[in-house]
Amino acid sequence: MRYAILSKNKPTLLIDADLYLYRACIASEEEVCWSEEEDIWTLYSDLKVAKQIFQEQVTGFCDKFKTNEVLMCLSATDNFRKEIYPPYKASRKKTRKPVGYRSFVGWCKKTYPYHIEPKCEADDVMGYIQSSKKTPTLIISDDKDLKTIVGKLYRPMSEEVLDITPKDADYNWLTQSLCGDFVDGYKGCPRIGEKTAIKVLGNHPSWELVHQAYIKAGLTKKDAVIQSQLARILRYEDWDQKNNKIKLWEPM
Image (cartoon, rainbow, N blue to C red; front, top):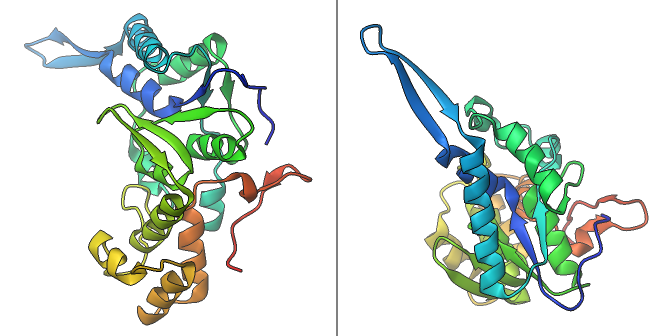
């Protein structure tokens, strides 16, 4: 994965642009009633409003962390997770994008430094760059999946800054491998929620405990591996540097 050279002097904010562009675009939508008698309504978006919302949010992030270094992380149209598990995010095909969203993304690309990697989601771009430890970075996202990446994570909705340790990152990934993610369309291990996952992992969490839980549920090692690959946000070691492509995680 090759990306723009980031500053070595100031922290670079790795911004989940998918999320915050979407929210700004939704916030700019308005309904218009053309005829109350005939009950005709349309929906329109004022992208000037969306741009202002987004720019103010980015400026707020920069002010908070005393830096002007940002990198907008965006998802590619293709996705390696769909290749290994076709139901992944399948329900989102029915969800419409906000009015003007594609144009809004185009504006973002012209306005800010950005990175998109083929077959990767924005989460993977942020995860890879931060875990490479080549420059000081801070991920900005409200997505819980980023708790599986080592380093600093700012969650604007709760205004908390987390410092994720390697132990935390692995534990959160193993938990996600067991629980799955209903919103993203992968189920995890049957009848295991967060509380049960804590019991399964105990005081010495390991992937082998995840594997055993799947076997106990009547599933296979392959099932456990696929669910773990879906749950794993790409890290530096998950990229084949020589051939410049994704290296899917496999158990030792």
